[in-house]
Length: 207
Image 1 (tube, rainbow, N blue to C red):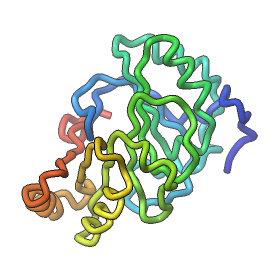
Image 2: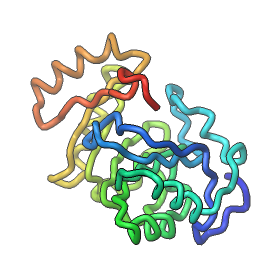
Image 3: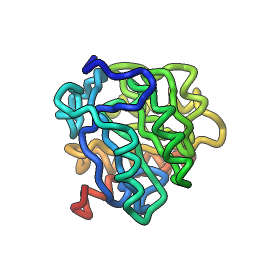
Image 4: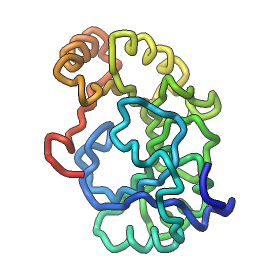
């Protein structure tokens, strides 16, 4: 997939890290430090960070340095995203963050085995590479991107695989938001176990 990355997770291909406001899903509105790892083979055609797909474009960075960067900011929330972060062993990263009283959130397609110790798991399954059945029951949040009408049935399929306490979100794919959002609103009004997630960071014009 990428560089010769040590299996102990002490080096990770860091695409970018930045401090912002979490824009979508359950933790919307919270200040958070984002760690975006390079490398993904899920291949969503509407992905808004396609430059994350090739891990070799992103420098192998000491995990201790990534943690030190996170500690410079006042928020105690860190979101690990990608790419697909679970390509890598994230045990060391989460251990070091949690030693420093940082809450650890992950955004994953669930296509790879779970590593790391997480305070919040946001599962966003993708049709192109299905989530592993051993990950779906662990999700705190199921966030399904709605690109066309058939995605509602697909969302219900995965809603049956998560725990009863898992939060359920439907989020319009950004480029089709004008067309899809009214369908989601109607769907959630008819199926109130679901909630609407919007990419508020795009409205706020922040990362």
